[in-house]
Length: 309
Image (tube, rainbow, N blue to C red; front, side):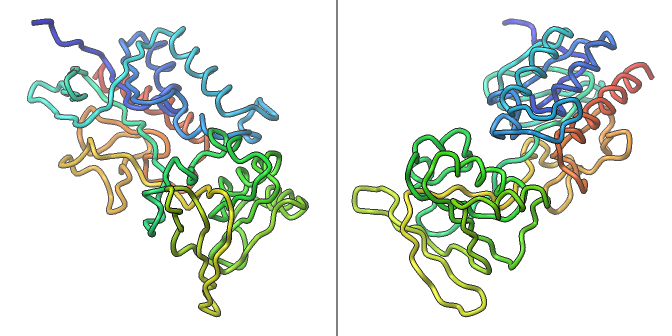
């Protein structure tokens, strides 16, 4: 039987927080395992354009993701593919990390698992997921070239992706439950100036209609003031109504709040010795690439001090 692989620090999640933590931890001389179940970059890899990360006036999410990933590997972090299901603190101070059939041991852990897209949970959504309904315009927008689509949401992600889609499709309807957008003013101004974008206010989707062939047919909208329902015939929908933290591997550890976010102090330390957290998975106010990288640097430094002490 092969000996279980051990790391000084296991970083779970290769988004901007995890990859920055990997750079700082590796440069501090620690052995680093960067564990990720998907593509490096997390939510960042699905973002068409990033314009608020210092040093880059404009860079695509996939490009910035690969730059960070390459940097982490060059610094000395070891990339490990794995879907972490459980973290089990051991009596000797080590941490057992269970990834299905694979297991690892680590002296410290940085949880940087980020978030996953929230779903509407309305009829037709599950049947049409990946077949007309998407949570990634960069990934799937090209399939709708020259057609009409809806974007559901009113925050930065929704408006950014609506602007991106307008360069591909013939019409973008933005469905928002309020009478004003939550997106940054600069993004709102771009959307309002785009002739291909039409915003439908005070409305929510109540169901997606599926054809007999299993294809997307329409979305039913309910106006929250009049309570009237109308069917909007489009070719597809892109959903951006928020995100939920990915923290199932922390069940039973008592370090998450009611919403599932990790609770940590200013040093990114949780209530469990040796377990730290960074990035969007945290209980925090601002979730941006730049704040995630800051969290990652602090978490790595804190893990280093913990191991020295």
